[in-house]
Image 1 (cartoon, rainbow, N blue to C red):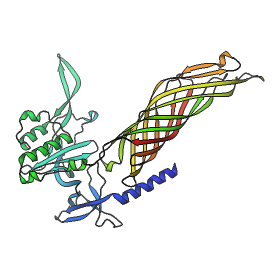
Image 2: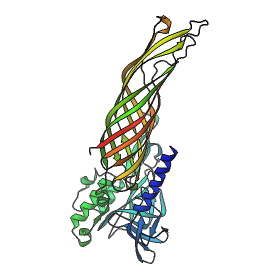
Image 3: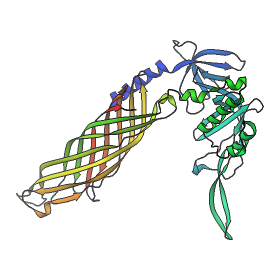
Image 4: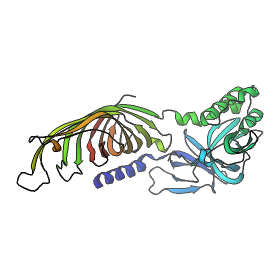
Length: 426
């Protein structure tokens, strides 16, 4: 594992050194434009600094920050502009909602991410769970499009005090767009407008196209550019071979049946992957439904726990267990070049057992030594590391122990380690 971790770290560092600096520019406070190579992190959160090199072959990178730069960008990919803005940072997650529909404004200096630049321009600010949109036109300086989810006390109900709260929305952004970014639309057209990236980008792109002015015709849709050629989904067929182990711990002092079973297990399934839209596709979410079947028989020597020379018991144990495993989790890629990459992933595995049994018999015919029980599987965790080349992939995977016992007093632990081979269909 230490060697594997070191290899991943080396490849990661080589990758960033080779492909992260891309052709771009920045404009300083004096309006001077500098052509350079910018470290393209494909920021999820809006940055306040960036690294650059004047020449791609330069050794040490330099750093600029928001106080000295009014604009920077990666050629034909992205642009960030500095603005002095009023921003309200209300959260949209249910457990963080405020109790007022009114914006709480703060004055801040921010790099805003350009989504559409034209007669009317749209910008985005993302910082953790804070996701806000800004706009400007030739007549309207930069301002935030206001959308707030908030809690409202339901007040009196049937003459009684009520302490329940309901979630309401302040959709002021619709009125802002109706008044200032509107080309031939009616008020009804804005009533269903959602506060999200796709909807707002389409609205601003349509507005610029509708105007037909010189600035509108030359409008740049950076959102469309960033999505072009970006991989968002992958589907693979997978098969694997695993060394599976079952550790059985019997709580009985007499007729102890504690033992281990092992079996080579074949698995087959599909892997669906959603590539997250930041950090150059280095992160993704995966789900991997897989069928597996374990069937093993073993003869072993146990002890009755009674004193005397005949305390040995010759057991036969047979176990049958099959299930559909559904691992879901996160994957991290480390790019070597455009065709090959290393990856690591961690998943939580939901196990849907479709039955099974564990049965003990003995040659002496001792009634108390015989036993049979069903299988009741729990969930577990798994980790993996692998390599992919174009459509092919290989992964070493370890499944941590999951419990299979239907009896509280018994401990039946199932774990496995093996190799997956995959082929990308989509």
